[in-house]
Image (cartoon, rainbow, N blue to C red; front, side, top):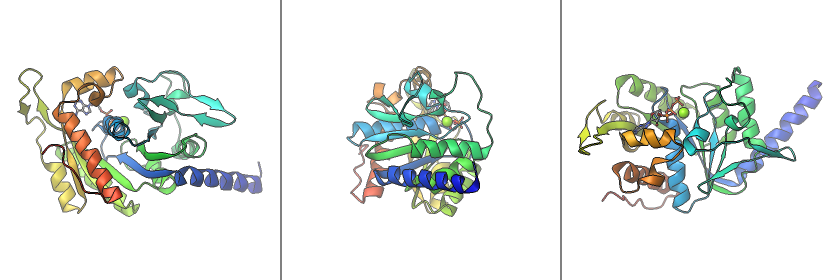
Amino acid sequence: MNEEERKILIAEEEKRIEETISKIKHRIAVFSGKGGVGKTTVSVNLAYCFQTEGFSTGILDADITGPNVSKMLGIEGELILSLERIIPYMKYGMKMVSIAGLIEPGKPVIWRGPMRSKMINQFLANVTWGKLDYLIADLPPGTGDEILTIAQNMKPDYAVIVTTPQEVSLIDAERAVNMAKTLEIPHIGVIENMSGLICPNCKTKIDLFGTGGGAVIAENNNVNFLGAIPIEPEMRVLSDKGIPFISHRKDTEVSFSFYSIMHLIESILNKVPFVNLKK
Ligand SMILES: Nc1ncnc2c1ncn2[C@@H]1O[C@H](COP(=O)(O)OP(=O)(O)OP(=O)(O)O)[C@@H](O)[C@H]1O
Ligand SMILES: [Mg+2]
């Protein structure tokens, strides 16, 4: 392929991405500084909240080397390709794409940044997302190429930064907040996940990793504090079984927190009054 042909292909892809984006009302990027803090858990459960509150919702698994969304939604099987378009999976009424649907289970994706970005662009350009109210991108940890690609091409209007209460996570979360500011994402919010542990026996809260650091980071950096989600051992168990916790356990603190966070994001993005479900 010569330089001229390459330019034409890139221009065509950019046009298709623009078309995709123009049909999606709000786009949310979920990221963190540190790994394993609950980004995928938050993405999946938040998406479930949006969908069940009547918003058409999609999830883009932008973690190319560690794609976990399929696993957490209990989705198996290959993605279907039709006329050079990718047909997203459907689960709980939500659309979802992940590289996990294009590779053999257990096979590593050993790609450098530009290849990973190319895949994300394909997910934006060639997936039949159709009209959506919300598209949530679940990103890998850190501040690497995937976030730059999502910021540039998906053009998120909300950055959700997930942190746990420990100092090591909070330091990295502050980096992520500042990255979101540098990328000029219009709205930024912090979620403190694993904020206290709910005892499986007596249901009282144990201050395992500490609490409150997420709110401090948000305040110090002048961004929204969206809420705290406690450690709920059953959430991990259900996650491993491919079941979003809130689809199964509605009357729990975790579910109230997720729905409250969802309504807060919705109120900020659509400038509508926030109704706190906890009160
Ligand atoms: N509040 C919680 N209570 C109990 N378990 C949780 C909670 N949040 C996340 N987990 C569990 O912690 C593990 C890591 O969560 P998850 O995969 O969502 O993190 P991540 O930030 O997406 O990780 P990575 O950086 O690898 O993408 C999972 O097993 C998940 O089920
Ligand atoms: Mg993840």
